[in-house]
Length: 116
Image (cartoon, rainbow, N blue to C red; front, side, top):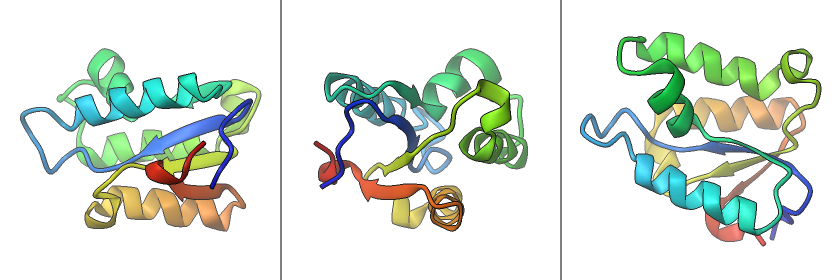
Protein backbone atom coordinates (compact mmCIF):
# COMPACT_ATOMS: atom_id res chain seq x y z
CA UNK A 1 0.00 0.00 0.00
CA UNK A 2 1.19 3.49 -0.80
CA UNK A 3 0.71 6.26 1.74
CA UNK A 4 -0.71 9.41 0.14
CA UNK A 5 -0.70 11.85 3.05
CA UNK A 6 1.59 14.81 2.46
CA UNK A 7 2.69 13.58 -0.97
CA UNK A 8 2.61 15.15 -4.41
CA UNK A 9 0.49 12.81 -6.49
CA UNK A 10 0.42 12.53 -10.28
CA UNK A 11 -2.71 10.80 -11.59
CA UNK A 12 -2.31 8.70 -14.70
CA UNK A 13 -4.80 6.68 -16.71
CA UNK A 14 -6.64 6.24 -19.97
CA UNK A 15 -8.28 9.27 -21.52
CA UNK A 16 -8.21 9.26 -25.31
CA UNK A 17 -10.00 5.93 -25.74
CA UNK A 18 -13.27 7.63 -24.74
CA UNK A 19 -13.77 10.61 -27.04
CA UNK A 20 -17.08 11.47 -25.34
CA UNK A 21 -16.02 11.81 -21.69
CA UNK A 22 -12.23 11.27 -21.71
CA UNK A 23 -12.78 9.42 -18.41
CA UNK A 24 -13.04 12.78 -16.64
CA UNK A 25 -15.37 11.29 -14.01
CA UNK A 26 -12.79 8.61 -13.12
CA UNK A 27 -10.09 11.25 -12.67
CA UNK A 28 -12.34 13.47 -10.58
CA UNK A 29 -13.17 10.54 -8.28
CA UNK A 30 -9.46 9.69 -7.95
CA UNK A 31 -8.57 13.34 -7.34
CA UNK A 32 -11.12 13.59 -4.52
CA UNK A 33 -9.82 10.32 -3.04
CA UNK A 34 -6.24 11.63 -3.06
CA UNK A 35 -7.23 14.87 -1.34
CA UNK A 36 -9.26 12.98 1.27
CA UNK A 37 -6.21 10.81 1.92
CA UNK A 38 -4.19 13.97 2.55
CA UNK A 39 -2.26 14.53 -0.68
CA UNK A 40 -0.37 17.82 -0.64
CA UNK A 41 -0.78 18.36 -4.41
CA UNK A 42 -2.53 16.43 -7.17
CA UNK A 43 -1.84 16.63 -10.88
CA UNK A 44 -5.06 15.71 -12.62
CA UNK A 45 -4.69 15.55 -16.41
CA UNK A 46 -8.45 15.49 -16.93
CA UNK A 47 -8.92 18.77 -15.08
CA UNK A 48 -6.04 20.30 -17.05
CA UNK A 49 -7.60 19.03 -20.27
CA UNK A 50 -10.99 20.50 -19.38
CA UNK A 51 -9.83 23.90 -18.20
CA UNK A 52 -6.49 24.57 -19.79
CA UNK A 53 -5.92 22.46 -22.88
CA UNK A 54 -9.13 21.33 -24.49
CA UNK A 55 -9.61 19.18 -27.55
CA UNK A 56 -7.73 21.51 -29.90
CA UNK A 57 -4.38 20.08 -28.74
CA UNK A 58 -3.07 16.92 -30.36
CA UNK A 59 -2.52 13.79 -28.28
CA UNK A 60 1.23 14.17 -28.78
CA UNK A 61 1.22 17.78 -27.56
CA UNK A 62 -0.82 16.83 -24.53
CA UNK A 63 1.49 13.91 -23.68
CA UNK A 64 4.52 16.21 -23.86
CA UNK A 65 2.80 18.53 -21.40
CA UNK A 66 2.00 15.64 -19.03
CA UNK A 67 5.54 14.24 -19.17
CA UNK A 68 6.97 17.72 -18.56
CA UNK A 69 4.72 18.10 -15.52
CA UNK A 70 5.68 14.66 -14.20
CA UNK A 71 9.42 15.29 -14.45
CA UNK A 72 9.75 19.09 -14.28
CA UNK A 73 10.44 20.26 -10.75
CA UNK A 74 11.82 23.57 -11.99
CA UNK A 75 8.40 24.54 -13.34
CA UNK A 76 6.58 24.31 -10.02
CA UNK A 77 9.24 24.31 -7.30
CA UNK A 78 8.62 20.75 -6.11
CA UNK A 79 8.32 17.34 -7.71
CA UNK A 80 5.80 14.53 -7.83
CA UNK A 81 6.79 11.64 -5.63
CA UNK A 82 3.89 9.26 -6.30
CA UNK A 83 2.26 8.27 -9.58
CA UNK A 84 -1.18 6.72 -9.09
CA UNK A 85 -2.53 4.71 -12.02
CA UNK A 86 -6.27 4.57 -12.61
CA UNK A 87 -8.00 1.34 -13.68
CA UNK A 88 -7.36 0.48 -17.31
CA UNK A 89 -3.95 2.14 -17.44
CA UNK A 90 -2.47 -1.05 -18.89
CA UNK A 91 -4.45 -0.43 -22.10
CA UNK A 92 -3.32 3.19 -22.55
CA UNK A 93 -0.03 3.85 -24.33
CA UNK A 94 0.20 7.26 -22.68
CA UNK A 95 -0.37 5.90 -19.16
CA UNK A 96 2.10 3.06 -19.80
CA UNK A 97 4.70 5.63 -20.88
CA UNK A 98 4.02 7.86 -17.86
CA UNK A 99 4.44 4.94 -15.48
CA UNK A 100 7.66 3.80 -17.16
CA UNK A 101 9.12 7.32 -17.08
CA UNK A 102 8.11 7.73 -13.43
CA UNK A 103 9.86 4.47 -12.53
CA UNK A 104 12.99 5.48 -14.46
CA UNK A 105 13.00 8.79 -12.55
CA UNK A 106 12.64 7.10 -9.15
CA UNK A 107 9.02 8.10 -8.62
CA UNK A 108 7.01 5.51 -6.70
CA UNK A 109 4.11 4.02 -8.69
CA UNK A 110 0.98 2.23 -7.56
CA UNK A 111 -2.56 1.48 -8.65
CA UNK A 112 -5.45 3.53 -7.30
CA UNK A 113 -6.70 0.62 -5.19
CA UNK A 114 -3.28 0.41 -3.50
CA UNK A 115 -3.49 3.86 -1.93
CA UNK A 116 -4.19 4.68 1.68
